[in-house]
Image 1: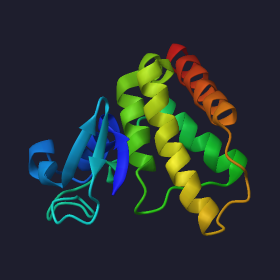
Image 2 (image 1 turned 180 degrees about the horizontal axis):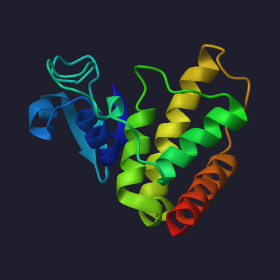
Image 3 (image 1 turned 180 degrees about the vertical axis):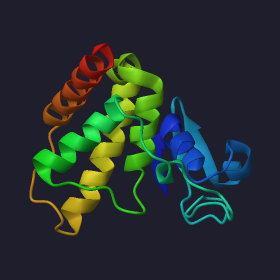
Image 4 (image 1 turned 135 degrees about the horizontal axis):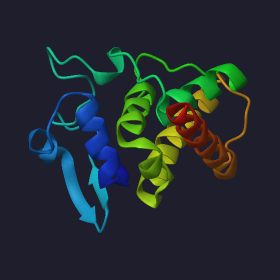
Length: 154
């Protein structure tokens, strides 16, 4: 059982090819903007829907903030997305919604949520020794937005 923001579950089901209606049975409760989700329920999207081609398999945009964040994490910290993480999907969303969305409270909350979750997995299995800081991650996102804007201008 997990407690997550509605937007996080919506992102998870979209990246795996489902609709909210298809997975609604795994939602056991709602607390404002948070959902209680039974991750062991058969309706929970543990894997991609059969025949679904995930968006992270498509090339990323050339100058978007998600592409820039991906490059910063790879080049500066040696962090690469894994096959089962939502990193490329989140980068694609950042690219499509642009820097303004990424810098908004809604966008930053969602982006940092994905980054924090993925960091936790890497921390737990020893793939990173870097400690998590919201401030550091936020600054990386803001830098990615500045770089995306600069490349788009010129």
